Length: 394
Ligand code: NZQ
Ligand code: ZN
Picture (tube, rainbow, N blue to C red):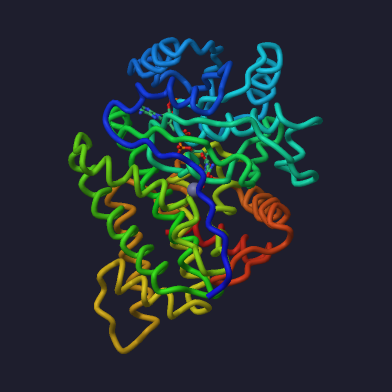
């Protein structure tokens, strides 16, 4: 067991109709002027934005709006948001959308509360000392950004995707109504389920410490997400499954499933961030496209864990050959990804990177990680390239 801190300051308001409480939640946080931040229009079409505005108006809270956040949210819009908030005297940011909107809102919050260029915090040349308070109305179960310490932003020039992780940006509240996710395209639902699984898998595949209570909760979460992802693939309107997935998404990335270990592996996420930055692929799909190749590359260095995963999560009967059992677990996981429409290799993302581009991604990934990454197996640039190369093959 490793010593740990578990910090989850976010008030979760979960259930049907909870978006109508937004006004009173902002008021309770002392917000006087709100930025409503949203994406490409799904919240306009669904009527959610209108309900959020009504709720703020009912509490007499003035607001300004900034839509247009794209998946893999861009730094250029963050700068626009900071300018707008400064001009308008905004003191509370309300993100209405998914991980991209929340992360963009967190970046605006950093930019408002600190001097200088906000990108410095993502380039890791400076550390922020404050952030404006953030509230969330979540519309997609995926990143867990509604409770996480993380914000991931892409710099427009060069497609450099980087994260800034501090407790300052953990949202003050997260409104979660599973009904709001019923309008999601099936592909986004599956991407979200994959990301949720991966946030716990990253923490689970480790060589650094463990606690049975954490591992057992992690396994229950993974089994629950797999079961409900399959249900949603066949029956997207199943509200019970939507609720299970939504809560799992928050629990998977608020730190709970890593308590007592070294923090986990996270190499798959770093590998995906390069794909997202260079090719603008959906985060969950990018994760599924590299995971199997990563897993086969590291399995011998973390064999016990892969066997436990195969048996306790994927339902494989343990054989006498531990490696064979572990590999069957990986294969079964890949078959699950495929069954919900996720790619299990990079070309399945609809892109064909050249070898030079693979090399560039490996180089950039290693640089972003400070030279090495991983706990299941420590990876350097050459290992990262080998995994990208493996993920190009059938
Ligand atoms: O922009 P709109 O029109 O709203 O459409 C969005 C977008 O096209 C759509 N969508 C969202 N809710 C919907 C909906 N469409 C219909 N009905 C709804 N209810 O879904 C698309 C994807 O939205 P996005 O916010 O990009 O998805 P997600 O939540 O998966 O966020 C992905 C981003 O978060 C980062 C990823 O790297 C990526 O940039 N991550 C953030 C993390 C964090 N902050 O803790 C951790 C993750 O590991 C991840 O890196
Ligand atoms: Zn993720």
